[in-house]
Length: 169
Image (cartoon, rainbow, N blue to C red; front, side):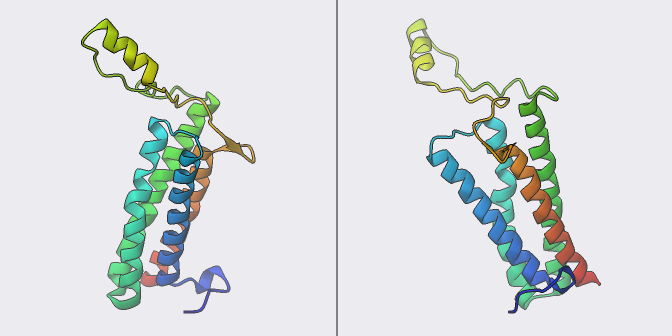
């Protein structure tokens, strides 16, 4: 397999493998930031769902693009495109919450279970770390990780849809 020289040279296999590599690197990076102490909020964790579905779907699409019916590969890439368009919208929404453009969900203040006694409640307060959805843990080149998710997801959606279009053309 040779690398494409331009966008018009991207095959469905290139697109599927590209989405796989980018998605896997992105989710691994999120896990790395979490391991380094930047705990994710509820919205951050929800944004990962697209990656948990997208990584295996990209692998499956790549296998089909290499060996199977091209229309099925195109369908997988189209689904990846839609998945990451949704992820992009979710990332922009979360970044907007962080910038204060609109309110976030009220449930984004951590989760405490109902305590049986005052002692249990006090113990929960001591051991529960609340990660707010409207507070940015880290900015890289001026963008939060939610903002970067929006950009990366948009790129993956474009790549997947471009690969799907190549199959149909």
